[in-house]
Image (cartoon, rainbow, N blue to C red; front, side, top):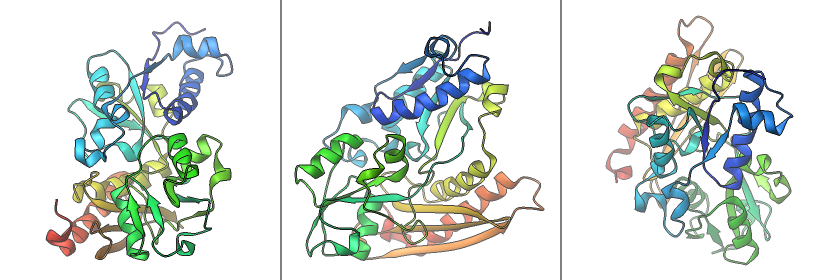
Length: 320
């Protein structure tokens, strides 16, 4: 067994968060010299500390009504700054564009599928829903994107963890819901998916499908942190979060971004919509990566520039 101090991992207590954190916990334990298949060794060198966030406690309102995305990270980041944990594992799409002073996203492992999944007991696709059908979602982006394609839909606020939302669908509280495909896969619930949304046509949340390992800045280049980085994912996410930053994206802005690597180029689409989906502002661009001295910075710059272009085109239409 290794002799170095344990790396204490902070995460939310939802079933999905624990599944995601457990995957990374085992990787960290292996990098620290423990047997990732030995639960006792894993817990000894990389203990998982569950932290309940405000976003977990308040389930009856949209996040934008109670403070935005940071409510899923605030208490965990406080523990990190106070030295009670050594790293935090988040769903990257839940992280605001700006982080507290002294903290950073130090590593992003290989990304899972970023697409949104359409889940329904009544239809195969969004287009197949009956006129005036009820769509359950708490995401302003999903609401706007769906209303852009189906303005007849009745959108109702539906929050909760994955199991809760699936149960509400089964109970008839909605005719369809949209969930991150990555979360369903990590929970082994792919069987519920009826179809997947095209990520270029309906860009997901920036960073959707990716996990963020957040650390104090002084710890960002520790060997076990560096080993968790997946460079292609870091590049695509840098572009998407550049757009998020330019649009001051939060739960108050209906915006999506999707980056992909194609033959040595980074391609990015960014869009923002009015809440009712009736106005849609969209820009696409790409950059060649092979000759760049700092590809990650260039990816961020591409996202930032496209985000600014969308923001300028939209003007007051998406201001909140």
